[in-house]
Image (cartoon, rainbow, N blue to C red; front, side, top):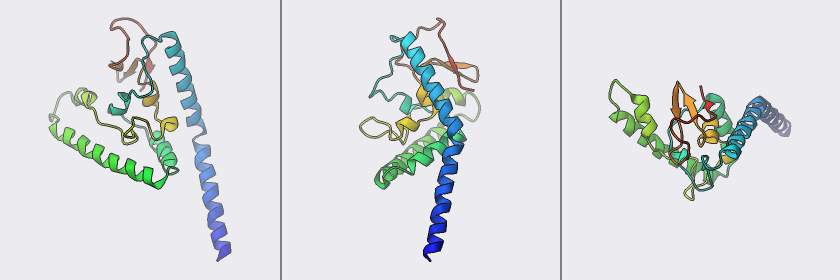
Length: 174
């Protein structure tokens, strides 16, 4: 039996290494996104008002790509089981709130505009206002304080100092 256990453990280790290799390009992209954020923040310090403790981006509703979800799950699995359970509980609450909002949507019309106004706390947002997986957060979380455009529609954080009608560097998210 020890030989079988050793074989299984070896395969699990190879699978973990494979998963990490698959994310090399994604981690490179995240580093590039962080460089862009810091460059814009340095150029427009009065406008980019992101700071520790601000959780506006943590309450916005936006898509997470498949690779981002897989990357989050990989790192979520490394958290202590108590933290995983807390996140799972908050995910259940967020899901219920999402379903409640969806039930109130009109059958036709501007559902995307309505969703943009919803404020649902991210399950990774801990009670003290920190992100449980901050260093592994999705791209939208990383650029939320910058002007962005998605599907031809612009967005800026409500707490930012970007002036409407003025031209700024913008991150295209689609």
